[in-house]
Amino acid sequence: MVLADDGPVEISESGVALGVRLSAPVALGVIGWAGFWQSEGFAVVPSIFIVLAVVATGIALFDLPRAILFDTEGVHRRCLLRTHMIEWDRVGALERVPRAPFQPRRVFGMILHGTGEPSVTAPKGLVLRVGRKRRYLLLNRAERPDQWDLLSSRIKIWAPHVSIPRRPPV
Image (cartoon, rainbow, N blue to C red):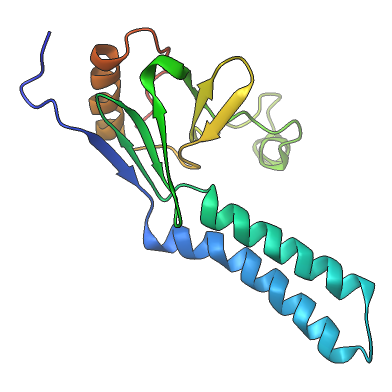
């Protein structure tokens, strides 16, 4: 089965989402620098903030994807300073981001709505599972339904062994 248009599928983050990701390391660095400026000598707490800022910056630059490209070869995760390619034969599944054990929105939704059932939350982003334990973040938000339809139809052709989650609700 061959599609009329068998080109790659790209899903990218907006500039605002990228700016929000990079604001956390900047904020940590500013807090650490302000602590050094206020102290007279070496201070432990500002040092911790500086170390956290360096680690968060490294993660944001090298491991948080800003665009994902799916093609016949595999999945290309484009981060700010690197591109990571994962071949389809290594991919086990596409999954939704796992839910946190404690979800304040669900608890407060139950309280506000007065029901015993938690309120329905929006679907989370996509994670690529390689092997049994290795997971790579693809998106931290739900993709649009038209993007999902195109992507799922192409994955069924390119990599029929990859399991995919259900379509996100409209």
